[in-house]
Image (cartoon, rainbow over all chains, first blue to last red; front, side, top):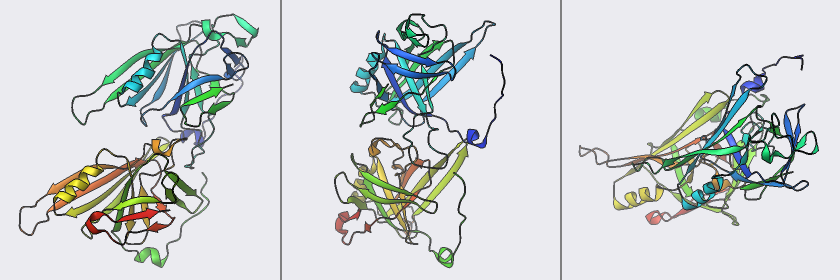
Length: 213
Length: 197
């Protein structure tokens, strides 16, 4: 593919803020259907099963304690390897939190991260948009070639590029003023940079779940 | 956001008195309803109510006059500007009631209204920027008691009392309260309450 255009950096790009707004996570299912758009490097559909919205859990974190890091590396091949690391801090160290975290063990996951840049610069009103999202653990490059219905509509469960729980670190601390809680880290190794999900996202009333379709 | 308005400075701005007149504090409660007002010339909160209620109840903290102050320190880093807000006030006489008041300020997520001697009511711990999209109580920009210093003094004419600091970090300038604020009329034994609606 020819490089016909470079890239501009505008004032609005320089106003971009860090951190994440929320994180959504779900387990891969054998009946998942994902439709990629390779022109825009996006994901258009995440269904489970086909035609039915996929259900995700939404995870909040302590403010300013969550980040997605993407590290690309090329070793002279026609592809690059991208290590995508998502970590966030959960304050509290409660039984209910651990019960939820146990669900990550041994699971093949996909995660969606929405950053803080959907809000129009200068406004304080939370945005209903989730355009500034990145999906990790769902990638089309070097994926399993079991195509469900079309070249861009694959069964993603066997891609082996899913997201996994890498670590849960934390504890009670020792002093009363120490932090109590855990930092959860999920990692996905994939062969393309994370895609944006451009399909519909509908969040639950309590903000702890959502569906993509 | 483009700049669409400048600012005028009038005589009333120049003669506005410094210092704090009233300090009201309440704990965030599940279901609290806050109405924010954003226009080119306003950055307000027009209503704070309890869940399902027509008002919200606030507790009044009196202090030694001419000592309390509100300071706001904004800092820009990359694309983000944070505002550190600190409200100090001094409760004279370290007695048991003051100690109990301090105990009640610990371990709780609060909002604060500081009414200046210029008549303006400044709200701390209630901000819209980066607020939770579904439940206001899950906003993490609430106010906390960030410090308290008690001293008996050494000299007989020294002050004996507690200096309390209420602080919050938010990502917008503190808003002014523009709704109805009904201040207490009887604060006997600290039981008087104020309301917002």
